Image 1: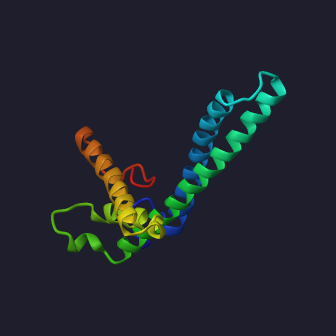
Image 2: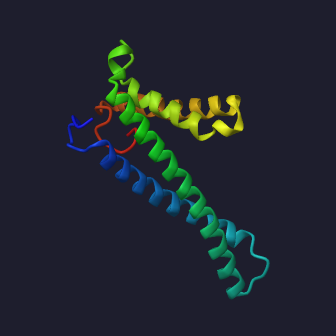
Length: 152
């Protein structure tokens, strides 16, 4: 696990991924909550508008931030697990298989309580995200995994 070219271990990468995902989720969810708060204000008074914006921003920001943080932890742990067992050597021409399988496992684990159909769909969405990222990197000639954040 300690052979990463940037010298980062699994836990260090997990903390960096989680922090960045949580921060982006808080900012994005807060902006969405601000929009919802402004649109759904029951009154035009400033104090009521401010209260509505703060309520919506805190509700959506914390929810999206926590969700992205949990997904980031799961993805980092699964990717570290697949790197530990060197799953890439068993997949043949499919490279890199570790991040793709980590995204599939993360999505499936995250929605496992909703049933097998929903878990499979969530895993497929995770796999699709990694596939689109890999295709875009290949199209632009950027080496895959160069950025070091999640599957980017």
